[in-house]
Image 1 (tube, rainbow, N blue to C red):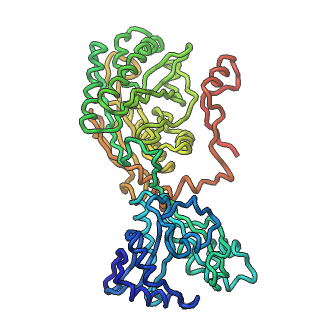
Image 2 (cartoon, one colour):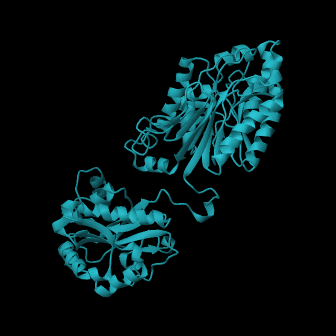
Image 3 (cartoon, helix red, strand yellow):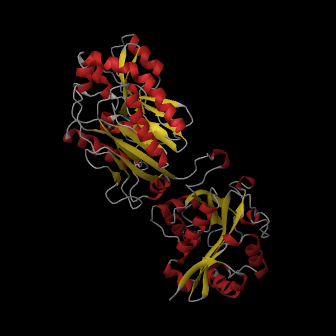
Length: 529
């Protein structure tokens, strides 16, 4: 047996007519006249599909392209087809409208309908249409019409209490019922002239007004595993940063990712000071370092996640990271969760904003080291649409590193996103509290068929200075979200719990702090009913 799916040709009409008559014997054996089939093939050849078995056409799917806003959700089959003239078809249409699908009864055990629907979906993606719409018959409704309304019947079919050959098939092919249509197809006694308005959404659709210069779904990450070393001058430090920026740019990466506290070698200048004072002296370099990173982002045409650095603001010490966009703009993220070590040795405090940032490659989120060990932050970023979460980190021991690593992997899986971690390696004499380092930078993925079996896209050599390159495909995240084996974001029991923000504005956080509010706490995420 040989089975092939292809576009319909005018010469297929004889087989097509036979299959139509047999398929619709239950509603009178109607069939499309040849002149109508010929017109469809003429005006929209790409939209007409058939399946042939051993060189005989036994299944078919016919469609037109329409501007759906011209019709709305209460149309009839006659209206959507222009009284069967198909004059409603337009190349400027934004939806594919299915006007016919049938399979010869003798071939229905071959699941040919699925092949036709897959072909339609591929066409929809190629044409960048919003999705597929169709009016679906409910032929088994006649058996239940005396006891169930159409809506009740549809609900029972969804719950698999009732089988309907058309609706059950449509639902299994990722369509959902948008509305019940009355009087859709006069003469359909099996469906009592009711129909379901079925919708399949193209998750890859991009509207023209939202198109950006960077439209490729493949995002290249350049993750720097940074060797701690002494720098005789600030310029020597900048030279080393520029070296990696240049390398990453040469490989046409979209993001350069630096580690947490990658500028602490500059603190050697203050080695004779107590740690709290030394790091506050280091913080005086932060603005200059950030400005230099922004310069590099522009000149090397790469978005930079500028690791993290200490920042003094209004008498408080924060651990901050910067997103330096290649268009010259920048964003600031302040580490939310401060480790006991940072509190003990430096007197650091936590930030107060958890938000995503728009880039020319989509929405991204940032966390710093310890932050990734708190699942609420990842969930809050996922709720805001983060596709990639960047995590600069600094760990001294293996157990500290694996806390960060394992939690980062969990965040990628549970939030259906990519997570990139960047760490420091090597020893740093003459800088108290940051003397030894352990790291294996990596890029983690969700865990499903679209991704590596171990959910690791790439990982660096342990404790070796290097650049880790990884291409991540954000379109796979949309596919996972809609069709994954498990769907963590969709299957949350939000009737029982949710992640909410207690306080979202910088002004509110500062006011609470300045007013000595005894109930003010820097972390902003809580779990509530």
